[in-house]
Length: 171
Image (cartoon, rainbow, N blue to C red):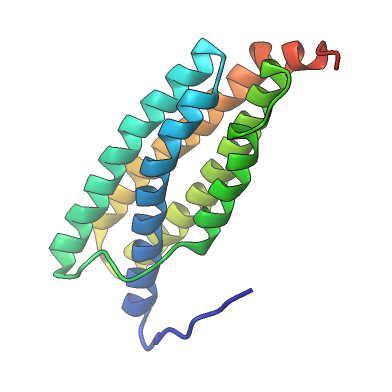
């Protein structure tokens, strides 16, 4: 595991680091989600990925607004966690076999991404509140709500059909 040294003197430093990590994570996801759309066979799953791609672009825009208000640049951080999560998702994107099983794997990979994002946005929101940045906290909460809804949608798709179809797969 590779660690890079960061300078954290203040809570604001930590907050900016968290925001930059989230910004990079979302940018990576904007590049990765189209591949998941292409790999998914379930129409409902494809639609969920497309919808979340559009939401993710809006989330990038929200983060840019926060950075503008802070007078800071959003760049400079690579989200290694998202990089790894998307590398894991590639296993399902490139998989061959039963399409229903692959879709179940894509859902699992996407939910790992959502859970990571929920943790990040929850942390950033808490830091924003502590720093008195109520407007930032509101924007971060909006994104957190979208991430939770995306996770719930994926759960519903899995439980209402994809996992059952995958369970009946014979290889």
